[in-house]
Length: 405
Image 1 (cartoon, rainbow, N blue to C red):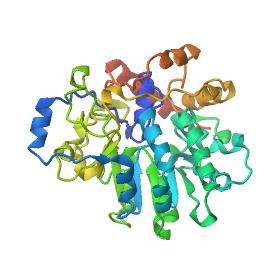
Image 2: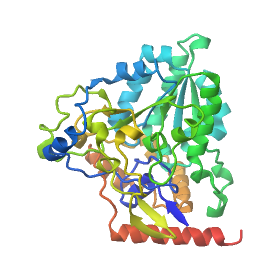
Image 3: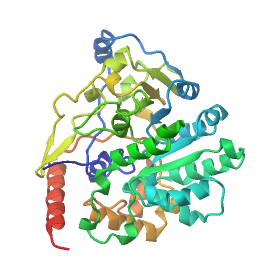
């Protein structure tokens, strides 16, 4: 049996918080620590034209002239992306273009509650926050971005006529954590996330000829199969071809401090968007952005790309988002109201244990330590000790699942 852990899961093994994209079981993706220097640029330029960056928000809005869906990763611990998204959804030109915002950090079990809240009905905040606190992804519940984004959309709707109001779609599988007491009861929900996302997009957006902004981790959005599994976009584009415009961030191209002023992006506007197709940046392989994933096959961990899946980025995404020098990217801090909610943190750590993950936050000391350093450091690929720990977690989970309930 082959299993892939999420980047979120792996990063927690490395004690790096709040940065998941995929889910804890289908795939593990680790951000590259790549020195994107002059030699690499010289090699890449031979493969295409120079990218032409444009101001990001107008470029994203204009993409809806051609596509029903524009997809990009929500913050995932990157404060710069959080800030851009909040600016984007408060842009009147975008509000005129879209009908829906689809989110990875939303438990579809609570869609009726979310609909009432976003429409402006009286719903207690403690009730609606179950939408993002009770997903299959622990990082959703610790993100202050989602605590802010949902109320922002609700407030925008209150200023709009009913026919212009935006709906928010929860795309994560329906999981009732209140009914789950053992690992075996989790079932396949955490493995079927791409199918869940694709189903929501087909049923609620594409079949109704609506337009949606997808705020979902980019590995759920890529046009072609990567890391051994199909993405949500690959699934729904079989029925709705060329319906989505996908944006990838450049934060994975981490620069050495000495390259901050001499990088190929140093004169780009902040924030900016550049098309991938036909450019040297689009010609770069996926491995320039991500190292090989850790694949667990029969609970043996190896770093390797599945054959044929280290593809040019222009095959996978349509544009690149530049938010400033990657080496200076700001990290989202955990909001105090979340960190100090002891009951919720206890529950998150219970879920982490069921999922075979380390605690979400070890202590208040960790919170203070995280707050002392503002930048988002990309993690190194796991060493032998981390790989062995993943293998042990895999074996423990298999034993737990095989036990009679």
